[in-house]
Amino acid sequence: MNIVDFSRQANYMLLGATNAVKKDLRPGHTFQEPDYLTAIVTKFPLLMNSTWHHVNYGGCFIHKSPQVTFKKGGRCEAGDLLVLCRKAVGTDYRYNAALFQLKRLEEDEEYQVTKPNELIQYDLYTEWPEFSIGGTFNPAKVHNINPKTVTPGAQYMFINDPDNYVRYYWYEESYLHHPCIFTHAIPEPVMQSRADLSFGRFLWDFIHWQNGRPISSEKRAVNDEWSRFIWDLIRKTRNVMIQNINVRVQRKNGIAKQQGDFFNLLTTKDSMSFLPQSYIDWTNGDNDGGNESADETINEEVNGAISILFIDVGE
Image (cartoon, rainbow, N blue to C red; front, side, top):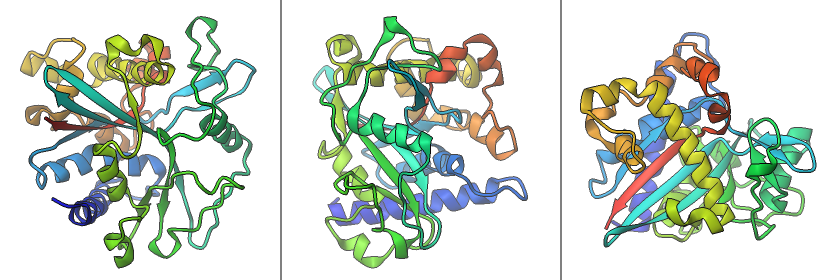
């Protein structure tokens, strides 16, 4: 496996995943950002697992993006997607993480940060003011991430047409990372370039620890704010998935509610047919993504849950 072959295959697998979701959508539904998320975390892992057998892909779809509220006021989405990689090192694990905001570009559109909520999101990813997860600020659970600057752990992902794939304008911050999801065919120069901005190239760099921002293990995250923030998102997602969507999987396979089992659940072949339940609800018209019961019982947990693409690279 080399960088060109992997990027090419991953990009085409993502196109195949988005096309599969388009076929599943209810009639008259306009393809939206959440539909790309469903492709990335439900269809894409299955396609990748059929090609790259030494790496396991899995995922879960949470429609409602987690909110963060700033200490000085204001709130925004923490992100639409968390990409997480786990690598076994002896008896321990290494983890890498990347948080994404998805932005869709229309034809010939030059994307700029102009809307008030997008300016707040931009401040989060570039200045990292103190915040807590959820719709209200919680002084007891403050995250104070450093350094307070751009990091490859928090990026933008553009859903783009191929002729428009390099047209990004984020004020003067042109050095921000810009992985792309393409809505149609992928330009050949992008497929062959080592410096392309595609999602496939991001994944190659990510699983080789050349992109994203590593996190400590869950037990060691207490003194690392970035790690603690990501593990908080993972725990909240795990609670939602286990307590609601995947109850049937637990009963069928006897999977216990323990720390490590969530990741194994995401990549277990016997469980894959159950995992996209919220995806099925979404494509059939349930705008809550199958989490209505979660809203009633663990509202703050839902606020902190996020769609996850999980990659287990083994040893």
